[in-house]
Length: 291
Image 1 (tube, rainbow, N blue to C red):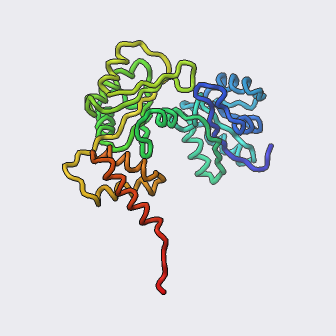
Image 2: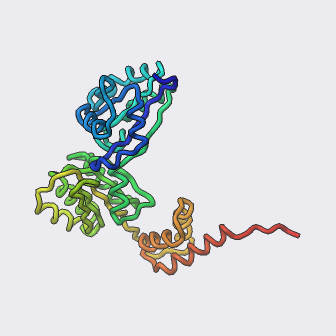
Image 3: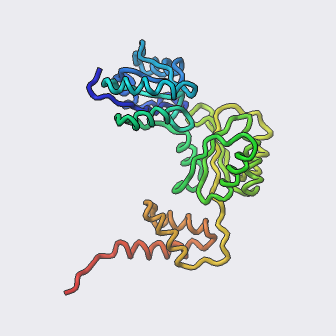
């Protein structure tokens, strides 16, 4: 047992076992206890990495997380280092883990993270859609007013949106997105990320609904929805400068900021690039003192 107790969230592969990091292996090997969403799947992962499990594994899933959180807190208070893994990806992202973290934070106990694979980020960066600003919706409500409200929010959002979906509902969700967001809204559909049959389909929401509706797809799906188009009759340079400056402050290059703003506002790229360069020049201009 170590002297410094903590909860350690450990990211695990979303498909390809080669994505298990050396640091994740070390965290699981050295933990006093390992909480797992599914102990059978975690035993398989640990066997692959040649990590002994023994009696260290504790089942912590969506149905018992709240109840068992107090027990985990007490273990950490005694100085144990408790790792937590879900079936795949990062704990707490459409998976259990959030309540364990909240309980430890409330108790003033240390929490650590070993970053790892995430279907959200993997799908986003491979989508070909804007990545500088995005929202994550997880699984949409299945029906009723809450689903309609979620679709309306996505339709109006000027950020890229990432959604999880099950294979038997992906075509219906794309059809709903086409209706709410417009048939031409750009989407990317990622299936089986990092696995042998990884696939990314790109096109319009309407075309996506038609494409996936003709198939009987299997596997895990992530839908990435492009931002709502900005409809502006006239855009002055001050509006463009404000938007570009926000992107530059967020770390975008002048070229990338100009590309995104030109597409977002429907203005010539040369105009956006000129403004971006002017802002960059102003920011980097040397400051001289009065003689």
